[in-house]
Image 1 (tube, rainbow, N blue to C red):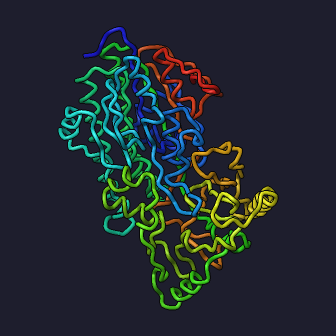
Image 2 (image 1 turned 180 degrees about the vertical axis):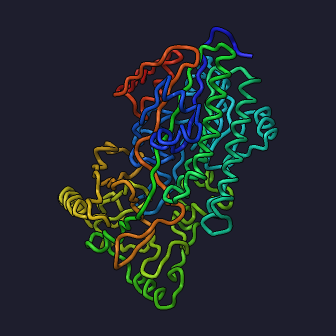
Image 3 (image 1 turned 30 degrees about the horizontal axis):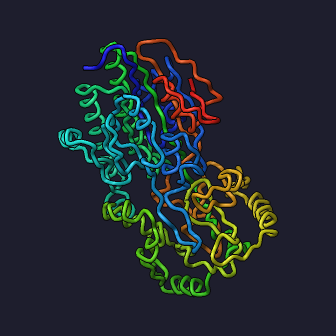
Length: 513
């Protein structure tokens, strides 16, 4: 059912796929699909973005653009009033590679690309949109195919898991089901439609790794998902061989994964060192909480106050399923009971006295923490231009003195935000980007006046590393010679376009083979 003589490209995206997990386990778990890349193709680490996080990295894969260019620095950014604003990837404004190909007659099937929540309705693109919103379909035929296999996208279960309504085994069961259903739907469409490019993205691996990687039994829940994806890879190779296609198969992930042992409460450190000042009411609420044994401080805040200015509200937030809206509400400032302990509690941006604060953190819980200097970009600046560089240097030097619980240096790298984002106008960039050592995460949601480390909650049992994966193999041909010095997230788009004989001429971008 394919057009003879035309090139075919299959791209299998795996959110948070980690090379170390694949290479350490492919024999034991019979991951024959991945094994073929290792033995007969190429499978390498691929450098991700800062922070290495889904909403930033996938748009860079699609567009070849840096965060400063595509406008996504995290799930959120902060505005002049210190308020979090939702961000989303605009496929119409920053064209993904499949849309660029469609203008040249290349027909694509795109199934659940992460962060693509709106359809661009290109003539040559069949699409089912992806996480984090419920799927949309570019055609009635595609919607019927999804219904045929009862595939509704990734299960929205994080809040139920966090709240104890379900356990890890049930979370795994649901993620396994959606992984298998996606693969079956993709196989059906590949066999019955004519496509030059097929891009299928699996996202469940990331969630399961977040919940389990620091558990002794993590492989019981993570490796079966890799096995189902490996089986789909193997089927794709056999299909290409059977049809005698001039085909290449690529693997790509936005970032990798690691087990998390401890969370570094960066707000506790900033307050302790006098860079951030809390409002007096917060301290009283915290003491009251400790005295009464309550699970959360007596602070109320509504989601509407936080999102009223969000440019993405109507496009994204209002269309989210209820449980995901609750998650966004919590991330944007709603009080959380989960995670509070005897000597620590939740903290929010509105608990900070910006009139006395010189530097603060916000937005991201990640192995890369973000710090802003409270300067003239904000409504209540406390640092002038002459003081800013000195303060950045001072904070960097003090952070480098912080020791892990094992007595080693906590900080692996500190990046200058102005240099990384090149003074972008898309958002207010952080001034310092603090990357901590493996096994640790920078946490902005918890605070303690007595310590700076706590154990991770269930959603942070695992987290990200900056190394995703890139793989390439020709089922019916010779091994691909990959330029290893070009393996980075920004070159993926040009690699795809070049495969079909197209070139954008974007400075600094080159195909990986």
